[in-house]
Image (spheres, rainbow, N blue to C red):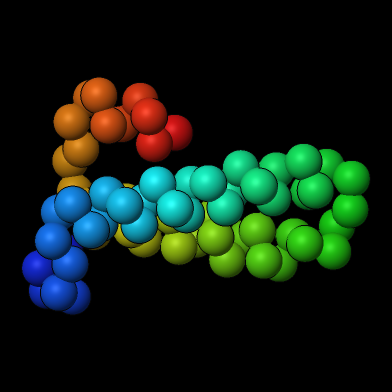
Length: 66
């Protein structure tokens, strides 16, 4: 699926890591202020779409991504 959109497997892994980091950045703010919730939800959705595109990930990567 990733090749359909022009991503190599390594590029897709990098995108997953980048989006995961943004999700972690929003986590504390979500607890204290509802304002960033809309942006955080966009990153959550993007993360899930990228995971679907990546397909089955090796266990070592799966543990790091979550």
